[in-house]
Image (cartoon, rainbow, N blue to C red; front, side, top):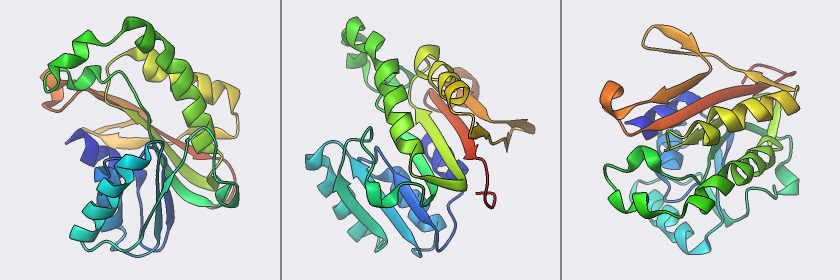
Length: 204
């Protein structure tokens, strides 16, 4: 699935420190914990405290003990972790237009709300980036096909944050640092993934 690919591209390894800044309902955190063989630490943050219990219960069912959940606005990073995290996943709140086939009520979303999303997503990405250690990895993703919420956000971020650079990965035989998945081409939900790296230090 697109979500599983996204989690895999974070590249989490045993013993690392990971932050999933918009973590609910927890599927990507769980996938990364499994790749880490339940060794290390995953900080699973979410703005909505009522959703954190989903992550805790899911982790317990799967026998995952490395998750730490916390209610947190991704735009306001936790000071004690700034510059100290190996890999950060920013699965930003989005219009959800990539999953409209599963959730047809999305078509009734208020257009003004959708138009305001890129500004929020940019601020969320900037907040998430503060956690990344030199040489660490930052992954931005959405489940929408709206370019303004996807490359529009990451291109703006990279232009304004020269300490971050694209971090290419291989997909379908091609090297690329960002990927848009289309339901009719890839057989997945509509999804966007962009992988970046902070300059300096050892490669993440």
